[in-house]
Length: 273
Image 1 (cartoon, rainbow, N blue to C red):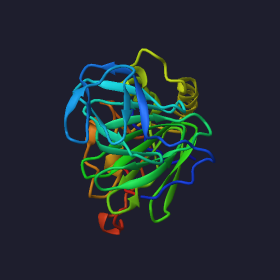
Image 2 (cartoon, helix red, strand yellow):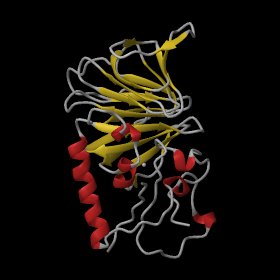
Image 3 (spheres, rainbow, N blue to C red):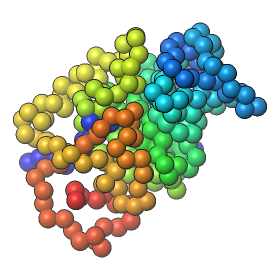
Image 4 (cartoon, rainbow, N blue to C red):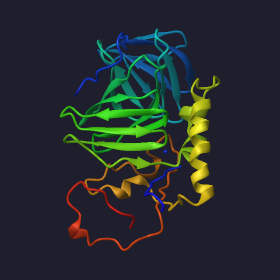
């Protein structure tokens, strides 16, 4: 029997691993097109390779622009287009005002806390993408390995490679959704848009191969629907271009008769339309 899947082609402090270093600064290693640093006063200046970004400075990218930063502990932060973010001055907290980030922490370093305008969660995982949503929440996509997303009230979701969860404003999580990892990676400038290969790319490719076996065997099929449609309103609202302009789909087993809409409780999983 096929399992139900969704696929797209994309504040509580976590108890980090012992000795996890603070993430208060990183050095620019790659700058592509329009990337600026913004001081606490609001003054902006073009970012430069080898420049050190320190909290509370922000990074701001323009259209078709991106940047890579590396921390002293080798944690990599890749910044997508039309993004604004900053590090907090203590701990391992990223403030994401808008846009997309790829976050890679070497194994054993620890995770981080993601904060947006309306939501916060502790996120643990070695390679993941975080995308701010229009309603003030965000989504977390795990690209390889396993991880977890934990809300301030203790609610937690476990993620495996190729899975996504929405962190909704008001302190709730969506169901965990499986994504078409191959489609996401193929179209993602956060993964492929830099001269240097992401250090975890081989692990991501293994996860893609494992997922492709499910398609080939018929254990999963692609419905062509975005994950957003499986979340009862309020919708996250960032649609088909949510992750680095990578299209995304959903996959589900052969359709079954849906329940009447009145039988779905608020914020519950919604079956395929």
